[in-house]
Image (cartoon, rainbow, N blue to C red; front, side, top):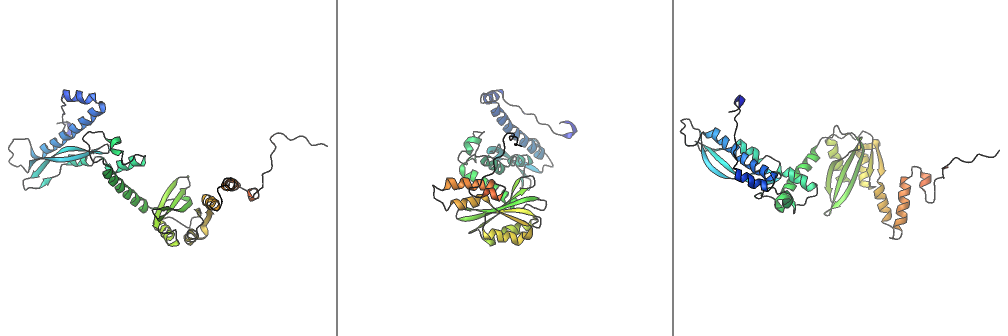
Length: 311
């Protein structure tokens, strides 16, 4: 026993096995020693519950009940382990706290999400992640299920997050087609320039009903529409009407320049597009309307000291 009544365990590893693990690298030694330690801790918990083997106990309340196959989650993969079983004298299963801790040791679903968001495909997940030869649950279908579960949880958190303390200088609302539907997205830009997705709505078209539901949801979550801010829209009448209904006079509406250029170029031939695109970009960058008109140019500024005027 260690100090303060904290039980200590001693782990013995066969030298021959350790040498074999080391030949595969220090990582293999650490992984295999970790599995041995897990088993040792579970056996120690069993001993605390039922006592030493082959010893009579008058007040015994539980018994060893063999073992069964279980698993622990390590480094984003399921690794099989033998789980000792304990049952009470009245035939009730006893859950081992050590096994439950190893079983839920790492959030597998969260690990899958992080790896896939970094660009790892479900097809290559097992090949890239596998650290234990006996690991399982790395098939494409299993990884897809974990990713779907993680996506569902993150979407739920996104759609239910409070916006009372959110301070935005601009709000972008746009729709993009996906699988025959329109996904309407509200993107907020904070005073520090950070972009945050505020909400998403799915509809057959980008109509006032869908946009109104999206903005109504933002209101119910605490977003203050009476606060003056810039609203960047694609020029659709449904978006403009919905924003004016919720924000009123406090809404400064700006037509999205990308959508405007795209709409203009969509009416031109392939030969006309490069020149018009260049002129449109120049006009957008100008701060004064008189210099944005076709054919207008800014006056040339003196690059050197002008010559003295004649008297």
